[in-house]
Structure formats: structure tokens, C-alpha cells
Amino acid sequence: MSEQREKNPIQPRKPEASERFTNQIMSQFQAEAGSPVQFTAYERALAQHLFLKVDSCLKEFEKKRRESGKESQAPFIWQNVNMRKLALDAVHRIQLGLDALIPAHIYPIPYFNGKEKLYDIDLRVGYRVELYFRRVSAVEMPQDVRLELVYSSDEFSPMMKSHDNNVEDYTFKIVNPFNRGNIIGGFAYISYKDPQKNKLVLVSEADFKKSCQAAKSQDFWSKYPAEMRYKTLVHRAMSHLPIDPKKVNAPAFAAVESDSVEAEIDRNANGEAIVVEDFEERQEQMDNPEAPQGGPEAVQDAPREPDF
Image (cartoon, rainbow, N blue to C red):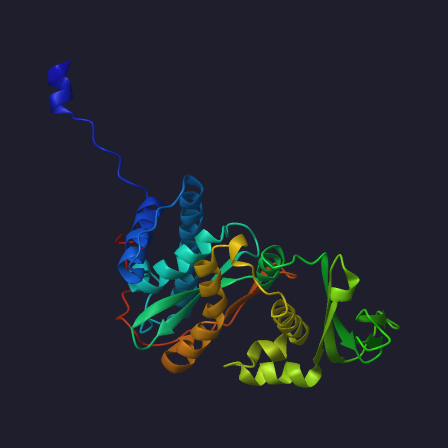
């Protein structure tokens, strides 16, 4: 029996790709940020879920690339992913407890980075999840946050705080629910246990247009005007919910908050977007079939197995 064992020694189990991904982002984060990170068992599970989500995204885009016959375009494979950026972004989202396999938590969006000649994976956080974290992590958690778009046939009257009105409030009536007309603005109403702290946030159509003009592409604004306006309204509401650093991993939260702005600036300067947006109301992927050209030399039968 012992001779048989010597002839056929037990081979150690090779870690799964998701396990190797988890180990790499931990070591890469330490190299980039200068501070070690140790995941709990739960955080390791979140890291493996994130790997599965990103891997699925890459396979989907690679399939579309091949079907479109764009042989000169960089393949959507792990070897062409900017792992330095992905490691930093991944750790921050894992530390916030975001689960990529839960709908509306994380949407991976690949962008070709012209400077790095690699694909940056933008780990976009769903705006409803952002609002949830803002609420539960606020210095004072509001009882409710109501968000409404206002159409031309609606009746909306704000009641702002004044010397004879201690509580901000409003009246809102949908007169014609099936033919409301055009969007003319929106509002967010943040309510607290103490009504005197209630906050009414107004966003005009002019404000929405400014957000549209600031976007690199107006494609989604023209195709999904209501969804994009609602998303803008959510972000305006969140800006009125200051964060209590004692309730959340402050560095991770700050990094995720700043990513949306910094990533947009970086993409405008260095990269081309493969636009893939997910709106939670639709629970479906809306993608732009046009992908960026160039980058690493395309290999028609490039391996999918990651190197890590």
C-alpha cells in the first residue's frame, strides 16, 4: 500500500480561479495602497462573487466581439484587464459589503484605457444601493427619502421653511397618470423623526440638462430620459445626507464616492467607453454594441483562463 502511495502521490488541490483572484487583489492592494488587507471568510466569499460577475461580463463582451468580426479589437480576456485598478476598486467595494451576485449592487463596465493599453473595469455601484448606504450611514438616519419626477400635467407646490413655516413640505398630485406630459423637474423629500429637520430638494429641468451636457455621451440621456433624470435626482438627494465615519469603513466609502467623478475624468482623457448601463427599475442590461478599437493585439483564440 505504501509503495502504491509513493507511485501515485496525492496531488495538492489547485486553487480555483476565484480563489486566485481573491489572493491577487489582496496582495495587489497592499502593493498599491501600502497597507495590508486581510479578508474575513465573508469578504472572501464576496471577492469570489465579484470574480464570477466580472468573468461573466468579459465572456459576454468577448462573445459579441467575435460575433461582430472585430478581429483588430482587443479581446475581452483577463490578460487584457488592468488588475492594478481592479484590485483597488474591488477591495473598497468588498469592504462595504457589496455582493456582485445580488441584483443592483455592482455592474462591471469595461473601458479601454488608451494610456495603459488595457481594459479598466469600472465597478459601477447601483444608485439605489448608494442611496441605501447613504441613509444607513448618515449622521442621522432619515425615516424616509421620497423621490419623484414632476411632469407638466402634475400639480406640485413646494412649501419651504420660513418665519411662519417651521417644516419644509410640499403638495403633489398626479392629475393625469396615463398622460402626464413632459418632465419639468423633480424633487426629493428627506423626512426625519423631528419634522423640523425635513429637507425638500428641488431639481429643475435646467439642472437635468446640465447633468446631461456634462456627460461624455448623451446617448442614454436621449434613449432613457426618465431613468437618467431619476438617477440624477438620487445623487442630488444623497448630497444632503452627510456620512458618519463611525458607521462605515470611511476610506472605502470615500473611494467609492469619488470613483464616479474621477473615473469619468480619466475616461474622458484616456479611454473609450463600452457603454453598459443597468437601471434597477428595468433589471435588464442596456448596452451599446459599438466597442473601442485598438489596444493589445487581438488573438482570435485567446485563452479565457486568467493568469493569476
